[in-house]
Image (tube, rainbow, N blue to C red; front, side):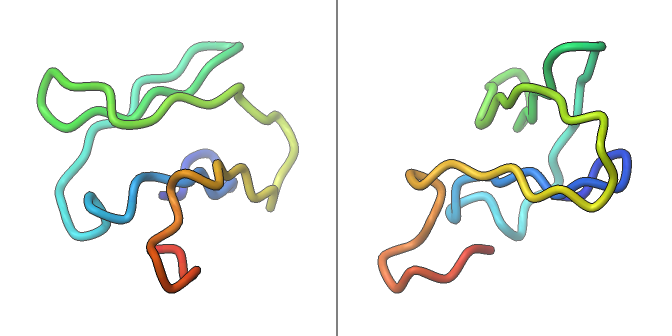
Length: 63
């Protein structure tokens, strides 16, 4: 999911869902309704890829 010119990973099961991003100076949270599906430390760089291995699908490709 792209936010503030950076790509943050989400669980592959949520790849085609409409999600909400909540961010502050330190953290990016990605929500499906009221459920937090991913949380990452916020990067203030541009073009960074922030990912968690657990968000990859069985084939290794990320959604």
